[in-house]
Image 1 (cartoon, helix red, strand yellow):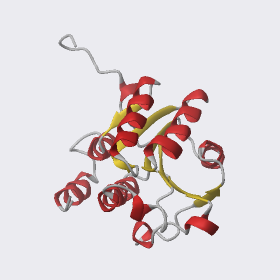
Image 2: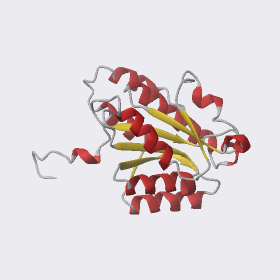
Image 3: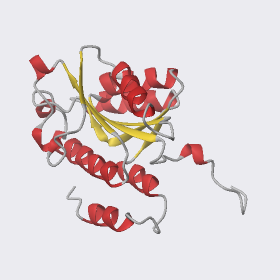
Length: 198
């Protein structure tokens, strides 16, 4: 970048334009995910950071009758978060419905989606690619995704990146939502980051 040039802001997450979608972190799915406890902890961090910066958050559940509900730990202190059930692997329909509802009451439209959850190479991947096809800017918090096998996770992230999905770290997302150390809620984010235990 030449001196004095501003970065392309479209490459950064913006709290005013973004929603967070946490995919299928369910009671009967999470225990079989490689490093599932870490994935859950990252998603908890993202949920908390999103709350600090008023980023709307949606939880999805894949066939909850068979796979159980969202794990209670994800809802700790946030029991009123919207949840949508699905049968398709992609959550794109549910995300688009959520965006339509949110945009109906917002002055600034949501044009970015940050994804995390399981499994990386199935539900997260299909959601990301469909949302890209709808013209949305899609980010995936790589450390907040998981699969049963690491190869599947790696290939899923590679395929999303090749399709134009921006692969980020959860902390990157949080600090981009914050934008500046002068943000009035920066101290809350700083405390949240300081107490990450993974």
